[in-house]
Amino acid sequence: MVPVDGQEGPADVCVIELGGTIGDIESMPFIEALGQFSYRVGAGNFCLVHVSLVPVLNVVGEQKTKPTQHSVRGLRGLGLTPNMLACRSTKELEENVKEKLSQFCHVPAANIFTLYDVSNIWHIPLLLRDQKAHNAILKVLNLESVAQEPKLDEWVARATLYDTLQDEVRIAMVGKYTGLSDSYLSVLKALLHASVSCHKKLVVDWVASTDLEDSTASEAPDAYKAAWTLLKGADGVLVPGGFGDRGVKGKMMAAKYARENNVPYLGICLGMQLAVVEFARHVMKFPDADSTEFNPNTKTPCVIFMPEGSKTHMGGTMRLGSRRTFFKVTDCKSAKLYGDVNYVDERHRHRYEVNPDMVPAFENAGLQFVGKDETGQRMEIIEIPDHRFFVGVQFHPEFKSTPSKPSPPFVGLIAAACGQLDQVLQDSCNGHVVAAKH
Image (cartoon, rainbow, N blue to C red):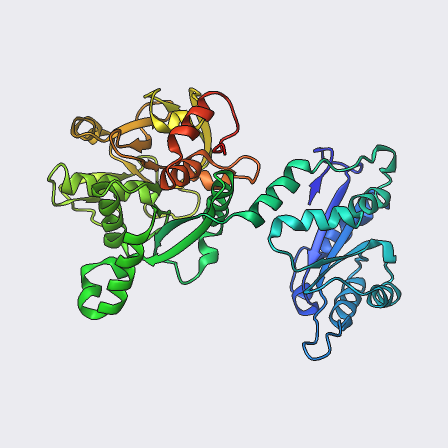
């Protein structure tokens, strides 16, 4: 529910997208709030778009409208009347189907749009544009006087480019939730944005971090072999954030493999912390180095609990939201990827951080902390200078990635994985869009 003018009050203009079956609708606690909001702002200031499924019977190809009819009836019974229908289907809605929906759902046929299967999801806005959905929304909101044709040339080019990509770039995603890819949806989207900007077709190899561990070698040798085969066959390695100690050893093994074999590596949040621990163990020769999250009694605490945090109250104790990171090394890869700026604002979500007391020892051993917070006590970005691309970030850059402005750390990983990093760094420093030239 986002007011168009950005202000609160009775004059707000709001577009609501609502989807689901009648069973879902009855369980939605915000239905009453939407009803009250629509009544408060009045007609012309509220547009409800109902997203519904129009299934197709495989045998005869008939499009069935009953699910949409039932869900709209349920909405009307709860005090909400859709202004538009966005119908999800495997093929374009037939005219008689659209007329039937219009008649039984009390929605003008001009306000019924079909979202059928396309080659990639970026074609969906183009489908809506071709069906004049923008004009319908403006008409409902009495904004026809300011109507303009959508400027989607860049979007069209990107959607078309995605369909033509042939050269693959393989990224090994090493985590403990690999059985449920939606757990890493933001990371996946950021990888996709970056790969398209580099004109590469993304292939993600899911590697369960527990399968890389020595215990799996004896308990499930086939899984162990398959995991290491995927890791060694990847062009780049990404270790995302996470909580808990399961699979931690496997994530460190992935970081160690990437570091020793000059394979591009990006560690996010926990992925950065474990790269630091791994470096301490195998480069600095501290075999007991660890994070106090997993070993509170370690004699070499590389990663520690934040001083202002609470170990007894989990709610509201994290370092959350947008925080500023200052580049302390101006000629590092990360600074160049961001366009040679002095600082960046990225979103955080963590309770543990690199122990600042150990930073001098790390830097003497070759691990650079190129980005820090305003106090200089919180480590935000790590790099190994003589590595092709070995970067760890304490923040979550995936949260700010968009198709038109892919996240710089992800672009760096993809570019390094496909041999385009030097060109991308040069383009970024010259103020160009972060993308490889062809």
